[in-house]
Amino acid sequence: MFRNAIWIVLCLGILLMAQASPAMTLKEAFEAAPAAHGYDRYVELEPGATYTGGLLVGRIYSPVTNSFIMEEEGLDVKIVGGGAILDLQGEQICMSYCSNRLDIEDCVIINGNVRFRGDNSIEPLRPEGSVRYVTFHQPHDYGVRIQGAGDGILVERNIFVDVVDTGLDYIPSTGMAGTLIPTGTAVAASVQTGDYGFPDVVENWTYFSNPADNDVPLHHFSFL
Image (tube, rainbow, N blue to C red; front, side, top):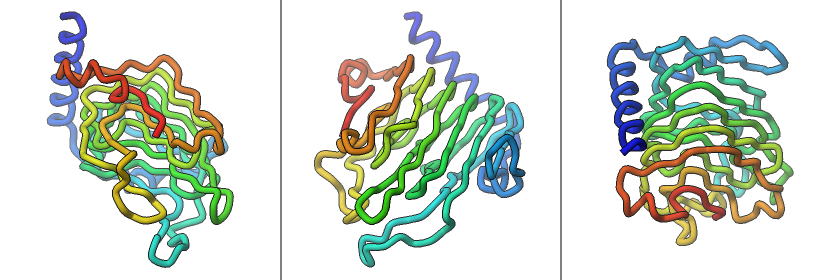
């Protein structure tokens, strides 16, 4: 009963804040952010405001050409949420194929996920960073996905509510769905954590309103 009451209050608060706040894109906030405190982009969000869409920092891998598509070399980024709502609208906040850092804290994330994506097969590209004091409500695929990375990543004191299972995740090297890569997990780290080191996953709270989902350990944490 207590957990259900917390979940109901949390959801109502998120919905009311989202309706009351004007929306701008997270990418706009990122592009307007200055360099500060040792970061290339220090993104301070407005408390209670809603930001839409995802954010890609780094590169994209093309399985067709077996090479990286250059978006940018990568930047060190910190997102200071201040209680802002990030409606990712099915997208991601992704630090991708670079050796940079992403730190995100104190915000609400809905309809998306946070990813750290690295690789050692072509060149050593291992992002680092942290996700701290973030409330995830119905994140798509995962809450936090750590893929081809691990060491130097901290996932601490976050709340994950009703992660959405969207089917099988894809294999970056082929672009095909992987039968051993299910979604619907709050925190998921790559099966290659032995090669990339282990992330620190500390004092997080996960909850599913469907009791059948709540009773499945892999919906809370998994090593894929």
